[in-house]
Length: 128
Image (cartoon, rainbow, N blue to C red):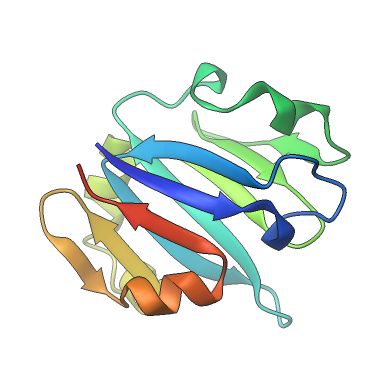
């Protein structure tokens, strides 16, 4: 699985840790709202809270989700954890492909965007 490292300055200024490390088989970055709040979406075979660092749940944010996904909403950005099955469904949707700024999967590498684009939003992917 690939690892995504997110600079927490792009999530919330109150975060004490400098980085969040997550693992997934596919990763997307897409905007939310007119002010381009980044959504870091990580797809794993199993999406559950144990996959997320505990310190993320101690911050002032909202926890939500539907259909089995987990969404952590922060002031500047969001982390979304979804199942790999969802990715295999979404990848066929032209709107998903159009809205994603960066689309990475272990199987195909970067399908849209690149490492430099991801870096602008405080994230880096380390392939397995």
